[in-house]
View 1 (cartoon, rainbow, N blue to C red):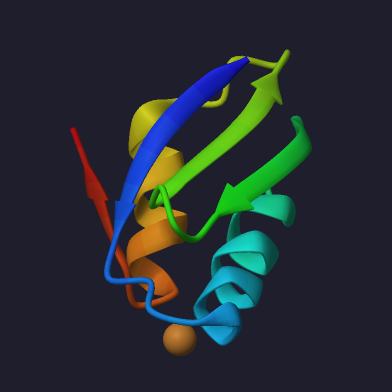
View 2 (tube, rainbow, N blue to C red):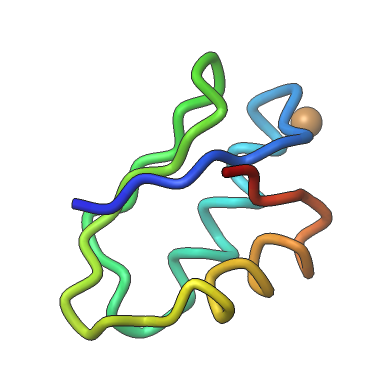
Length: 66
Ligand SMILES: [Cu+2]
C-alpha cells in the first residue's frame, strides 16, 4: 500500500472529489481517502508515478503534502 497526504479536504464532498480523481487513474486499487487524517491509501501495482498522482489531486483542487 502507498500513502499520500492530501491537503485542503474539509468535508465529505472533498473526499468524494479526491476519491473520484485518484480512482479514475488506471492501476490505482483499493483506494481509501481518510478525511480526519488527510490521507489517501491505495495499491499501486502498475507503479503510477507520483507526478501523475499529484496532478490528479491538484486537478481536483487539492494539494499533495509530504
Ligand atoms: Cu469539502
